[in-house]
Length: 271
Length: 271
Image (cartoon, rainbow over all chains, first blue to last red):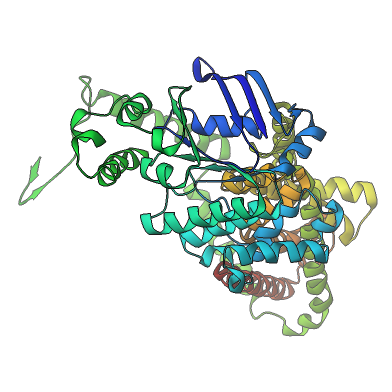
């Protein structure tokens, strides 16, 4: 579904991505794991060209992605995005926020006048039903909690009826319980609708739990690729070079708990 | 420094020059004030000599000629009408340009600086001067007043509008861009909902200012109540003048009150 070859992105002198190769299969839930500043966000933003790659090719659904306005809009219609800070429009109603996912598909002139085809409104409603926020449709989005806002973000992404969803740290601003719920909604939708998801995370725990495949990114390079079971201590050291011995999962008899402590450290750093 | 049972507490100046820089600053300020007083012929002696004349003038204004109120109804309404259309035209002129003059939406920096300069120029010319120009161009009457307010107001509104656009949260804009929305859709769904209350507040404030300005536009023949004011003074009918001034004060206070109430109501926020 996505084929990335030799992707390099430079910001001035700083090289955020250093020749990344990556393939994403149709319908796959891929987790990109890595510390803050490893280049995970840049990787996603190059895929839908919110950031312009310095070098390298990206094929999406067999099509080479280019930057001219027409093909860019076409590309973005197929690739939805979910953000760490939700990026919903606070003053719009929940329903209208979800409908903004349809903007690439509806007639522009009518949309300026707030007129939408009924079938698109039905699509938006269906997406809200998926994240179980149907009864909040008429509310202003700034009245919702963080977890609910992110579910609106997911519904907006689904409303695009995309082939791919890029999720950039979707749960980094949420508490653990809400994080699980949000990731479950995302995973379920991806499985039922056959959408490929590329999900950036910095929490090892969630990566193990939700990733069908995991790609480890460190300092702009892919340093690991494999299933959740292959995510060993050794691998974690490669992804998080700064990890101290005492914090490694190896030193603990209960491997599930200690990564949580590690996660804690990283999320503090992130905040 | 101790003065009886009081102490003078002044922080010691930083640096090793001691009090000299402050003393020099003081001398410069005094020199500038003296120089400006020479040019503007500020004279407290003249003011003292003039006081009886001012008293005489005020005495002639008293009591206001209430019968003159009848003749002021139509010009007062005309003043409000000038202010309404002056504000509306200013809005229409500013609207398309303000997006180009916002750093975060402008297509490039050349356009940005050009549009900002347009606003600066129109805002820099006083309404009265603009009114004189428009009176010469389209003749006596309220319409040149409308045009003067429109041009000057467009500069002010455009500057405030584009600055409020620069303050919005970029997240939703990016999210809309990633759905494949076009530029006008991004403005309608991402920008306007975020700036609309600020804009309405500025518009109301502009209307208030326009009403105040419209009361004096008549002095240069651009319609409204100012025309009556100047006329009554030229005929030495100071009691009529007093009535005019009172009506103007009431109008400005009413506009101030209404716009404050409306702004507060909007801030509380309907959808």
